[in-house]
Image (cartoon, rainbow, N blue to C red):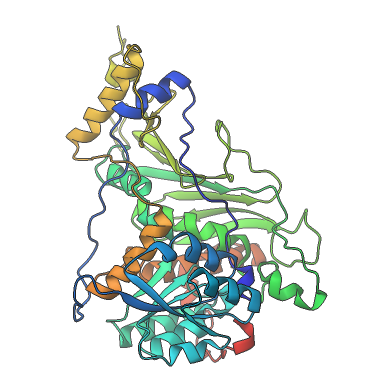
Length: 482
């Protein structure tokens, strides 16, 4: 199954989509508004700290398209990790992964054999969604630390089961593959929000649009479900799990809360090829203080309004009372900040006085149109270009600096950072930014979003507590389904 894992996006390359060429030149060197230096979140786990510099021995389960990407582009280059075993039932995928490490890891076709090894401390799980829980359960019970791709679990019963496993084994790291939490772009946006730069968040608009069927070619019809598992509900959470999961996690993180309800519509309207997952979805998730996440994922067009650089139809727009942030991790990460201070504060009942502004200051004008990048763009500032743009950029830099927000550019690929961080947490002790509770809340949003579309009604997040109540999770992981 691992040959059909998530995400087929190409290798990201930095490319900031600023609208005007002169603005890109000016912003590139002058603006300091990109990602904050990540700060530790939460108290470290209580665990014996290993010697600094020691490698973490790990196993890898499921080196399919997504798994092999993580191995080839990142894990293969992370020195603190040492791959001892790789498991896949599909021999070409298994051999390709073994060859990547010059034949050193031991190959397995039954992941349980890999888990029996005492010299393996941690495992990476990148199998299809319906197999996440069975493999993760076995790994945790074998005493391994676990990195599991999103969505963390597939059913409501598994939410409760994973919480129980974690409570019984609090010193074992569980991290979910939500790499935006490790992006400097997004961490800067979060710091800006926490410091009040865009006021109170009221809405987030997010989309991940594509212009293709998502189908893989299959030469042997008997392997249709194995190759195209994403197309079928018994294996997959569809667009909600594969794409929306990343973006609802961003909304949770930026707002600082989880949703209370979700409603929406979905359909199989365009790709009538035997799939039973929706090929387009439109959702509204409501948060406790009235904030809304408006979400769209379609498979017929990937256009983003106003964007002039190629991409994968993916972005988030965070709207606050004093401004907005447009941000994406694809193709290589870009972010824009728009100032839009609200003259009348919410809840203020005083009569609004008519006013005449004789002249606008730079502070008044910053962000009132083109916006300012929250990441460096071009690396050269043309000294001959002087004027309003430079003043706006300098204002933006000073504004954020005065609020304690520093802005180095993305130092490493967020996928690399999330994998490296997992290994460091295993070795040295620490709490993942995308920890088990983040993963479970994200999984709940995926399940309930699909549920609301299936039942054509508003679904409340409190309902998950009753879903599958009394049902014991007994799905066994079959070796030939990994």
